[in-house]
Image 1: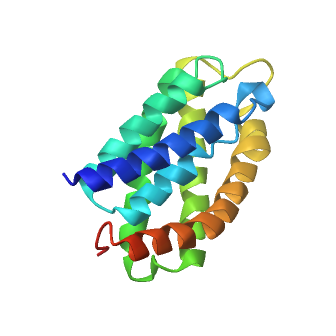
Image 2 (image 1 turned 135 degrees about the vertical axis):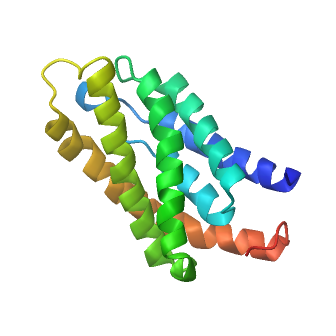
Length: 174
C-alpha cells in the first residue's frame, strides 16, 4: 500500500473527525455526519478496494468515538464500512463521469442517504431509537439535510482536492 495514499486518507479522516466532533447532536442525539463526505472524498480520490475497506473501518471507529446518539457506537461501526462499499459500487457504475463535480456531489448525496438508512436501521434493531423519535422523523430531519450538506460540501472540496493532488504530483490518478 502506498504510504502517501495512507497519509492523505488519514488527513481526510482527521478533517472528518473534526467536523463530526464539532457538530452538535440534534434530533435524538443524531448528528449531521460530515465524516461521510470526507470518507466519500477519499474513495473518489483513491478508488481501490483496500483503500475503501481501510477508510470505511477507520471512519466507523472514529464516528463511534464521537457520536452523541444513544448506543450509536455499534451502528456507526456497521454503517461506515457498508456505506463505503456501497458508495464504491456506485462510483464504479459511473466511473467514466466521476471526475465531474456534479456527479461526485450526487454520489455523495446518495451515499449519505444509504448511510443514514443503514445507521438508523441498525440502531433501530440493536437498541431502538431514542425517546419518541421515529425512523422517518430522523430520516427526514437529519439524513436528508445531511445529504444536501454533503452534496454542497463535495461541490466545494472535490475540485480543490483534485487540484492539490494534480499540482503536487503526490499520486497519479487513474
